Image 1: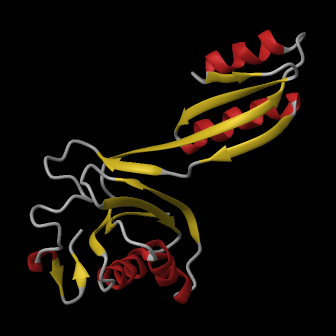
Image 2 (image 1 turned 60 degrees about the vertical axis):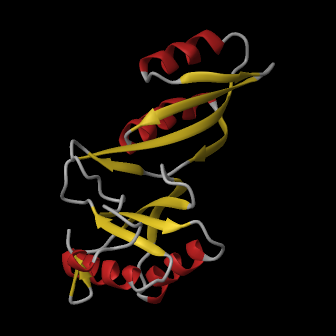
Length: 182
């Protein structure tokens, strides 16, 4: 899997144009997470797709052609932190509630809502951890679930991918022959 971190202007239609780059080239987006960045007027996207090295470089170059795209980084080979969040409503009759809450402790999940016959649990971690927690809860009866998808950030770099050095725009030195440096 390839993971891109894309910094974009907060404008209507940007998400559609970014997704269209992948659709036109027949790449399925496995995970897409978008949220505000640390800079006003900019959003940060984490996009995961199944692309090899050459295809990833072409996708990166095509993303840079979009007007509202400020920076694109392929962080696949870099030391990174990846997290996923899930909210899971599980059937929890009173006689099983303590058992479910003990499982939540093992996975460092939190109870965020309690109803007469169910609990809503919040778990964050790697995709594998979240998947394992969901599978552990299935025998109790998962009623509803929502997941964020992967959010990623590189480890220990002074200048983080996804954040332009100055001016909020890709620098000419970042792009060589239409392909951004990684």
